[in-house]
Image (cartoon, rainbow, N blue to C red; front, side):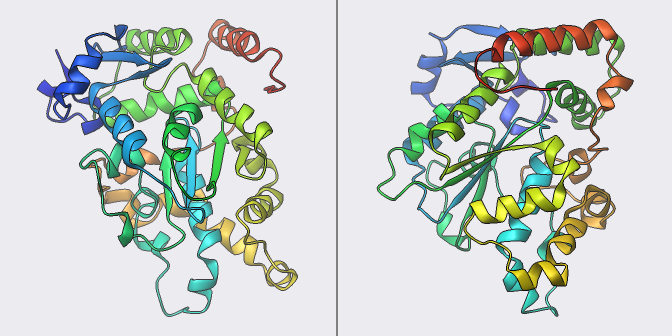
Length: 335
């Protein structure tokens, strides 16, 4: 059954918003099925659902970021929600410190509504969305590979914008993705489905996969252009939150002052953006995001090492061996 036949599916998994030109392109692309049976197509080394591919092509054709804009990039379930929260809070901290009577947006809106996805929201419904309505600096996010994203950013007449990538260990990313799929489809999938998704994950036939190629694109980008591409590790943010948030602020050209550090500004941001705090907010327990996905779908444990509760030793070994082989020689290493 095709995705467009199931109305409960998120729009990005459907095939009902594709131009004739893109349909012609899709007909020439390598095709496969995801673990649930929905069609995926490989475009320039990356797997997409039809609607997602259409939006990616529109981003490449029409999105032209300005030098002050900020793009947040990640794998699905790779730390996206936390990164959006942290960057929004860091960049806009002065505005809300000076106006304490104003409720902080992170307390009343889901992070995904404050920092919209390029291809899953903005360009999913329009080739030319109104970007002028967003405050400067505009903060947007994407799951696109860096080489796919650069087909848009390289055409901008402005100086390069800042790109922040968060990378999470693939075993935890897989497990988080599994729970996300269950929540998204409002069902409890069986062990057979778990193993099918695992096999698809290991073969790379998954939306935005192969995931190791995704990580490598941003890793290499950060080595080649350290001024404009920052590579962050989810696990390091967990281990050294103060240090990593200060590193993030410096990269974004809004470093914390000595006075801010002494007054506890960094800790305030970390407390505000903690998954425990965000997941307990009413808006994130019962609300729905603009892309039509329940807000609570985006929150779970956020722990490092939860994969041990779900993967067999053989499964863990298989992912580790694939990652080690695929990343060999790149300098990118996972413990």
